Image (cartoon, rainbow, N blue to C red):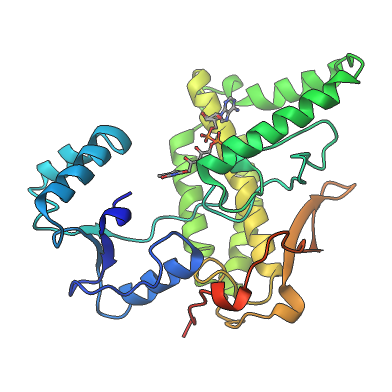
Length: 314
Ligand SMILES: Cc1cc2nc3c(=O)[nH]c(=O)nc-3n(C[C@H](O)[C@H](O)[C@H](O)COP(=O)(O)OP(=O)(O)OC[C@H]3O[C@@H](n4cnc5c(N)ncnc54)[C@H](O)[C@@H]3O)c2cc1C
């Protein structure tokens, strides 16, 4: 929110080095290169702005978006008038509005599971953020409501429900099992150690083995209350996403989206073979299988030569 007021990302010498401050894999690659160039660390620079502008940024940022931020800086004796806000590359976000991944949906927000609709961060509507979540949420709601009109009330499958309940509630049966905090911490470390770009095929292969084997650790988790039970189940989702991400990353043998899919063994983009989606689905036997899906043509005029923002990896 500070950028429209004139703030920008600068290196340790105070110089701008990013072409476009908006979030993307290309932008992350520019940050990554600067951090590793001897010009790091990098920071959000505001100290060149006038006092009124900085006060306006503070009032929006501290009163609205990040209420604890003002106290955070005060505690460290920092001011936007004299200091940049140091920035770094965070841990990997496997899904969410900032990514180009998620559950496959069509233009009606239908998933490939009959009767199930998806929108927002968990649906694969790349870079949709809040506006996209609102718009796609409405599309999903309208289509699901239409669909429901013609539907007979289905009888739930009692056997399926009982099996699902047993699976989800399992951690409550062993309250002294492994604490969810430890299981989550280790899993996040494995993701960061083996899947963090630039991506090495050998590290990813080790990561894949570890994510698959981690299923056993998850069955040892214990929960003492509903909150811990929720955390345990979230860790299952993190593991599933990690396995899907590493399988898809190994499958796509090229580099694309700047830092996000920078493969050390395939450092170039290869539109001939990889200008496509990589999808995963569950086979009849329950295995994850991968396949390519063509990209739909643009429905608005886009000058791809004009719009290109392609940072070289080397
Ligand atoms: C740090 C940060 C900054 C961002 N800044 C911006 C910005 O400036 N502008 C912008 O447009 N977007 C921004 N975004 C993105 C935006 O916040 C998200 O795209 C948007 O909130 C997604 O909405 P959603 O409803 O899909 O998901 P969420 O807002 O994540 O809602 C999902 C809800 O489901 C609940 N839930 C999860 N599991 C279960 C379960 N099993 N049972 C019941 N409930 C469950 C969760 O608790 C949560 O409340 C930002 C995101 C982050 C993380």
